[in-house]
Image 1 (spheres, rainbow, N blue to C red):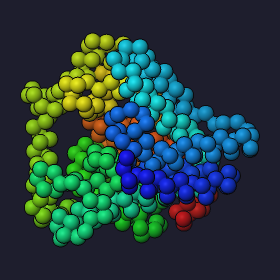
Image 2: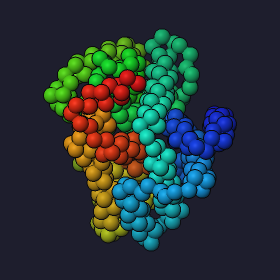
Image 3: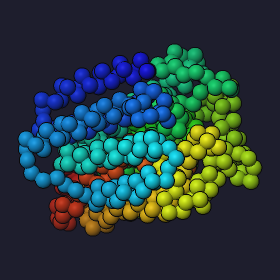
Image 4: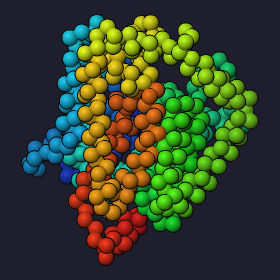
Length: 442
């Protein structure tokens, strides 16, 4: 068991205990969950049984669910059941059909249990975060915590350039350096996580009027996160971020061109920072090794990892096109790696039912964005800025499995609550400026 995990878990539980008496404010615990979510150290092998897959945020999530149960029991009243919650139930029902065909019942059960747990946290979070102030609190603490984690990752990489002591030391790889991962278990988790937080931060900052009306730390935070993202060398996340920013730029040029200028300046600072880190021979060799291997691994005609990994997904679908091979049922010939693609994982492990369940789940997200075109409320503008950025995420999910990632569901929670606030807010033209001013002043 990881000693660091035990120490951090004790601290988190102690902080949670301080919040327990305040059952009137359960949204604070979902904020604590968001803060703990970048710490992905687990109690054991994350690919093993369910008991060894617990991370710090899961402990917070359990406490949060208990607090929400007590809060609802004492307060009374009904629960808000959104379209996403219903769609998540449909997805789990479709995915559960794989239990009848899987040759590893324990792995499939563990995978579905993890998905059900994180979807339940999303459901409780929708009922905990009720108003604009609570949503802003969640968004601010999540971006702030992610920026702090990114700063740790960037600082640790300085060890390979100027020899500074590392906060979180990692074993070096074959070329003498490691990717920036901070409190994550691997660079893939780090890159995928920061990509989503960066998208949310950029959309919120843009909706608040960009540099003119926002606090100075927002552009700084985004620059730090972007630099950390580049240093993770997670190729799918880097490509997805680039595509998202390009799509957002096309939208922002028509709405607020000054924001594009500031983001461009941040991008130049990030590239300068990457160039500085590449002055280290170890990091430079690691950088080119990663991108050279990316080119080689995408050759599906050869016996590469991608050919084996993706090939198993197609083979599983051909063998059982209705329900696939069962979720979490890792195939030995794929080197014990799960399918490196959300879409192919749905195809191979869920079959046609899995594809249908996933389609139902994701199309509910599009429903949330209707608020962006129905009115000009501040949260409607936030959704309008976030929509083009998520195009990059959709592309990156072609190589990343995102459904059990905490950052995805936190983003979904923010989108769901923002949509609810936007649709409840009807901003008349005469009062639109004053309404915007109240949001951007925070």
